[in-house]
Amino acid sequence: MVPSHDVLFVTLDTLRYDVAVRELDAGRTPNIARRLTDGAWEKRHTPGSFTYAAHHAFFAGFLPTPAKPGRHERLFAARFAGSETSTDETLVLDSADIVTGFAALGYHTICVGGVGFFNKRNALGSVLPSLFRESHWDESLGVTDPRSTEHQVAVAIERVSALTDGHPVFLFVNVSAIHQPSRVYVEGAAEDSLETHAAALAYVDRSLEALFRFFEARARPTLAILCSDHGTAFGEDGYRGHRLAHDVVWTVPYGQFVLSSGDR
Image (cartoon, rainbow, N blue to C red; front, side, top):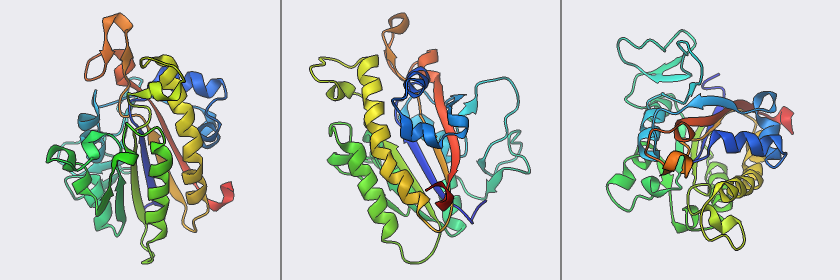
């Protein structure tokens, strides 16, 4: 599949598995549902309980793990001795991270940032974006802009469209809209809640459609990975937020599918 395919990796920052499933079953995320295999989210466990930890693991090839017993082979891996989840089907890259590994295979790597760990305003916020050949962030892409996903999609499409060298693309987008403050998506809401979380997801679904259609129109097919990096708590067992060990934080939705011209 690689390098015959572009790669689109989208993380829906903070999205809970239970909310993702509920909204899909209710028909409120039709654009995502249309692309997911069998029209359903896969239940997985994240390797990190907050954005920085989870994405470090993702970029080392440790994507969310299927939420069932077993030794689950990985899609991508950075080579290291003794790996028990790298098989003949795993794309093993001779690099410390898969972004650098894809670049070595000839991919043009692009990061469209979202939450603060991608804002490049300080050393910590530059660690993850610095893995990419080019990275983009401004306040219109962050958590405080209620139209952030639309802006992120516009940047992503503009940057990929500008490439003329014919190389495959590895595009990463960290969708920020579902992260707090999600109350901006429910008129009159005074605080974040499961309702505002769901409303943010519905907004994201509408906004991602243009990105899906863009890649479906490209000559090269696209391997798409769509998942959450972690969930968040809204009072369950007294917990609020994330960076904590609760099931609503550790359990995330995952989807993997191919976008191609035949899908138009």
